[in-house]
Amino acid sequence: MKRFLIYAITLLFWVGGMSGIAHATMIKDAAGKSVPVSPPYKRIISLYGAHTENLFALGLNREIIGVSRHEAYPPEATRKPVFSYHDDAERFLGAHPDLVLIRPMIARGYPQLIQKLRKAGITVVSLQPRSIQEMFGYWKTLGILTGRAEAVDSMIHHFKEALNIISQKVSLIPENKRKRVYFESIHSRMKTFAPSSIALFALKSAGGINVAADAMAVRKTNIAAYGKERILSHAHDVDVFLAQRGAMNRISKRRIYEEAGFDALKAVQDRQVYIIDEMIVSRPTPRLTIGIYQIGRFLYPDIFNDVTALTHDKFLSRARFAEMFIKMTGIPFTTPNPRHIAARKKKGKHLYGDFKDVNYRWLPAAFIETAVAQGVFGDIRARRFFPDKPVRRKNIAYSLFVGLDLPDVNPFKIKDVSTNDSYYPYISAVAGLGIMKTIKGNFFPNHIVTGPQGFKILEKALKLIKRKGNQDR
Image (tube, rainbow, N blue to C red; front, side, top):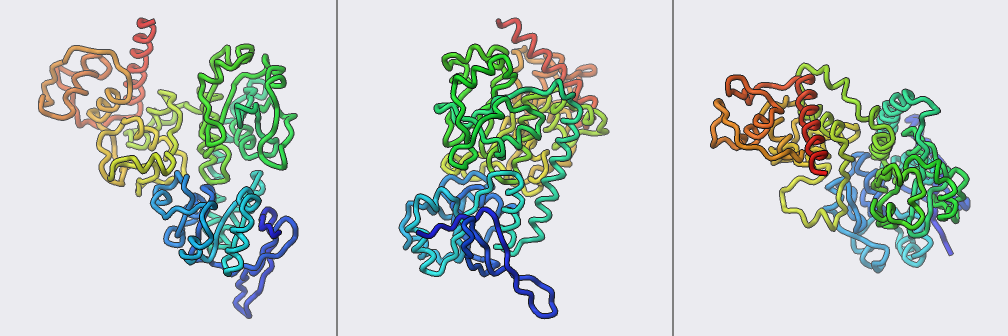
C-alpha cells in the first residue's frame, strides 16, 4: 500500500545550464520513497484548512481550484468549490487538478482515493508539521510546489517579527511570576498536548508554563493522554486552565467549571478558565502569532493589554482606537466563522479578512476585526476599513454606546448636533452620563480625538460600567 506522507522533505535539484536556477524534481516521504514533482503547480485542490490558508498567504488564489468543506479563512477560501476525501475520484478528475494537498489522516484513511488520483497522473502530497521547526520547512515545501519560494521567506520574516514583539512583552515578566497552565486538547478524554506540539510552543511563547510537561504523545500525534487524576494532582499548581475549542473539542467554560472534581483546581476557584480557537493555536499558519498574543492577554492582561504607547498619539486613528478599545475592555480576539456559518451571512456583509486596506500579517488586524465584530464601528459598508483615518468625537460616542453596556440615562440636550442626526442618540447618551464633556451644551462632534483623550474617555466609561455592575449585585 502506497503512502505519501511528506514530513521530512529532501529536495533533489537539476541546475539549468548557466542560469543557476534550481528546479526541485523530487521530494521524499518519511519512509524514504521518492515522489516526483513538477512545480510550479497551477491547479491545486487543498483538503486541509491550514494548507489553504498558507496558499493564500503566499499570494495564490486563481491557482486554488478546490478546498475542504470546513474552510474559515481567508474569505476567498469560503467561495471556492468544495471537495472531500469522501468524494469519488471521478469528481477530482473532472476538475483537472495537477496537485492535491492532503494530510496524513487522509492518507491513512483513504488510500484507494489517493492511488486512483496518482494513477491518473495527479501529484498527491501529504503534509502536516507537528512542531514549529517542521512548520518552517512545511512552508518552504509549499513555496517550492507553487513557485513562491520568495513569498515564503517574507512570510517567515513577518512571523518572526511578530514573535519578537511578543517576546519583548514576555521578557517583562519575572520567571517566578510566570503562570502555570494546563492546556486541554480534548475534554471528554482528558487529553492535553504533546510537549513538542505547536500548541505548547504557543503557550511557551506567551510566557506560560506547562504543568503537564510529563505528558506522552499518542500515536506520534500532537495529542497526549493525561487523565483527570493526573490533572487533579496539580490542583494547587494550575493558575490558568486553557482549553482549545474546535471540531474535536466542543467545550465551554461552564462545562469545565462544572466538571466533577475540578472545583479543587486553583484556576477554577480563581475563575481563571479560558477558551481559545484551535485554528489560531494548533494550526501551522501565520495566524499562530494571533493565538500566542491572545494567550498572553489571558495570562498577563496588564502587560499584553497595556495601552501606554497609544496614549501618546497626537490623534487616534481607527486602527489605534480599535486596539485601545479591545485592550481596555479585555475582549478576546474574534476569529473567522467556518464556511457553513459564514454562508448564512447576508450578501455584502463584512466577513473576517475582507478588508483590502488591512495588513493581516500584523497583529493590529486582530484588534480591528474584533472591534468590527463588536459593532464598535458603525460605518462598515464596503471592503475597506480606512485604518489610518482619524476618529472623531461622534465616532467615539457611537463606539461607547454600541460596544459597551452603558447605564440608562435621560436624553441630554446637545446644541451643535441636530436631533435628526444619526449620531444624536449616542452623543446625547454619553454626554448625559458625563463620559464625554460638553461646553455650554456643545459637543463638537467632528473634533479629532487624541490618544490621551481617548484613554480618559474609555477609562471613565469602564469605571461607570463597573460601578453599575457592583450596584446590580
